[in-house]
Image (cartoon, rainbow, N blue to C red; front, side, top):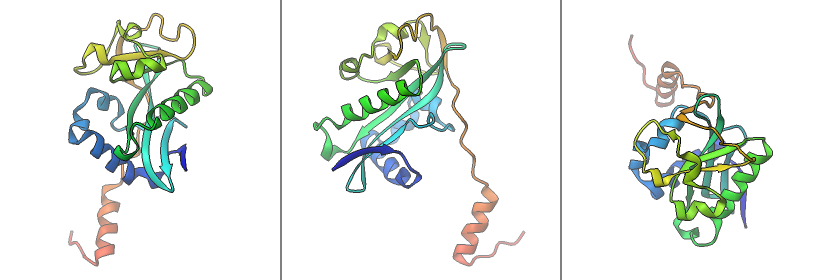
Length: 188
């Protein structure tokens, strides 16, 4: 039975494998990635679709500003294992994420994606006309959704990342741990 759950650290490796399979290495070159790199997803808004314990889908939302002083979310990436496509799992993940974003009091969501697919959830290019991203994007793929009436009215300017920064690993500790695991000794 397929369930949508909060993403856990145990999902990380399977999530990265799924994203690699769906988008390939070019996913790291996308403009949306500039807004995600080094950041944590918005609190409570990272989801995993699992079937019998196996990760088969993922959706994350990120804290951003839709121009100065305009909090919003950035959605993405949305990915579904190829063997589960055309079963509506992507739509289930979308409605799940949108519902939780509304429940947590967010006002708007932006994304870069296929307009015909995302328009069924209410996303439109009309809401992003006065916004721009920190890199190249096809304007017809830059979409917005208001979660509350007028959630993006007056939004203009550069979209910026505002989410919590990831904690960087302590490189010296990682090297020491690896050395202990392999029995190696490094001379200073």
